Image (cartoon, rainbow, N blue to C red; front, top):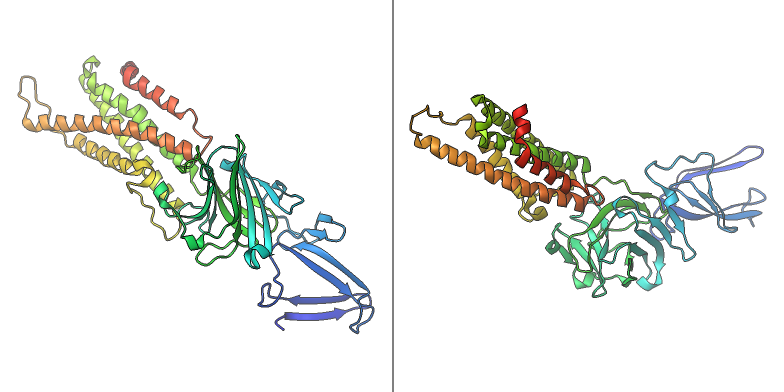
Length: 446
């Protein structure tokens, strides 16, 4: 008898019962934060006896929606005190079919894919344990996956069910890293999926499985709000995903939040903009001003332009570097290492970025502490000769690395944020070619 603040009151026309109850108690029927079935009843007097009125009804405690479980109507008629559901949850995306599956059209990067699910309480096929059956269809002939997350939708640390169509294999995996070697199948004793399969029809791939909702040593799935990740590749062989996104879904109501901002797109967009301007526009112009210095009538002018543009290159590179560091820190789950400059991270893009950052600073220091230019007829000192060799050599090396870096950065951006930046390659190479090959006349006119 664990009721809290229970009581009953009457006036001349009504009786009111009030109580607070623990939702989950051992040996008792649990009350869920989502859909539940209740019975209401009252008698003909204050003495307990046969009820004079009795009616079962369904009530979703998350949304307050009422369902007449006898006549099958209601389902959307809220009680007067119902509150609006959170703005980011769109319950209109979910629809329940005749087999009891709730179908959801996923949004964001996963647009075009469909998730169907059904919670099976006391599933006889799982020894009476609660399970969830999932049917995930993607608009691509490729491997696909659904993952469970307890860290806000980050890949690393989540647990995935991955389907490989060529072999028909559907297994559970630990996601230990973003590289393929870091996607590791769980031990054999944890491969407990029921009726798992993968099928293809020429235009789409469908992953089907039933999973225990609570398993030892694994991220639990609740009959309420959960965070999942969806992903698929560009072929049937497991590789880097072509599409990936995170979403939150309530298994009791079908409400979905597709607006989980795991990857900080605004930061990465600004990072690429600063890097592209620095190395696709400013650096080629700075080098052109130096190489073609004889075209300048006023001798010191080329140097002023060269120095000013190079300082802008350094400043823009610092900005791009800091934006990347901030974005990675924000995207890293609490307690995990951001691995800023790991050689395994994103095709070495981060490590090369660090090298460019260091060389750019060395170049700036070389520019500040350059040896005196010899006067006409004066022999060039060895110090000056070595300085020119280092300054020019590092400049060309840094520009070459940066061009490669911007190119690979565009590819990474397009992979992570599918549908974004389709023409960035064309824009970058067009600007770079114009500045490196035909930009000098514009500089001279300035």
